[in-house]
Image (cartoon, rainbow over all chains, first blue to last red; front, side):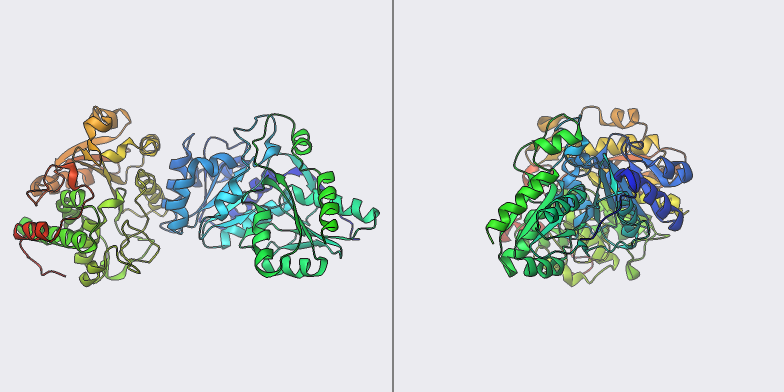
Length: 317
Length: 280
């Protein structure tokens, strides 16, 4: 089985911050807006180097999204930055009308998504954002898995014309994507080849899926692991190629089961290849305060939960 | 352009409005009639724009954002009469497969529209964004926007108001259609705006007032607003209008906010509005 070297440990939001700075240097049309969370979003470096291209919106997310939509008229590529909760739920209608329906070239960049936001608790731990964003026509939804991939995705979306939702997080997690890897929107990464089961994951659950595959290998179970960093447009071919071979699938995400990656995968399978699927995700409940690690254990999003789901789905083959 | 010519255009625009709304058997005639004079003056007298070659980016053109998107009939008519698209297309308003959606959208690529609107309160933010980009592009043309008075009850408007003043967005001229009516009745009764002039002033805007049916006042005030741009403050004009202006049985009543006239009522309206430029 392919082994992954841990290249270091960093938060994915820092990948966003570095990516924003680098794409800012390469593309003079890139501008950034932030709603009073410049430090949390790691946008300080961009602000320092390009103060004239940085727009502090204050704690007024609706106006920030509306302004970003307006700024595209005349050719700018606005990146908005705030927590995932305030990037989506709070401004759904602004995104729907001014960004998605109007097909504006706005990049909605959302940090602190999911339970791993930790101690701040459920008010800030949005677990519905992928669902909301993937329901919107014209919206591209990307959930990168580590620091390097978040940086690569942050830069890649500048070349994609149209609205994008880019979701990342706060905790320090292993880096395993190579720094020079090419990020292609809508093309899944086949990380580990296997024959017994397919594990499809996004975001922080990708590394946990790799860990799960390693544990399963020790038990004689061959798991294929796919990093589905783009939830929309979904790489249907990657799903069908893999599940066609393994005949069962586990999806893993730091999101509600309703509306997330698992739902997206199930839609593909139910149409073309109905086969057993098990889900790792949050089951119709809000989060709570705690450390990120504690929360991932309590809400069933940890490596052992993926192993368990694999064993369950194998019995249904 | 002479005032008489502008008035003749606006009269035709009013004919278009009542015929479009009647033809679709739905739409919003009240606010549309109330803003006919303003939009005619804006498009035919004030703005530098390019109806023959519409571009989304609108570089080196003045831009307009309609925030209260439900008065789409007046905007569509003014756009068509300006030359953005054939006037015959006005007959397709609110019909299946038409570019002229019930509320303005960019979805079907109708020339002249740069942003969807309808869900209220978003247009000021859009206009500020476009104004910021004009500054970044060293484009000296202006951004105009129009808002309903009832729409000012939306919180996003006041977020935008704070932003524009704090950041000296001084290439923007916003106008409020101050007709005092909204769907459920008088604005004063539904949710009073209180001292509107004072509120905008306190937010740091230059505040002007004008009579939305007096052409000398419209032209003079808009020119004054233009002359005040570039001075570090955003500009807002509180424009007094009558909902339903031009059709006697509609004037001043919130009841014609979003109701189409029947055929008899249509005829009654058309008698009052001379066909100055030829119907579509």
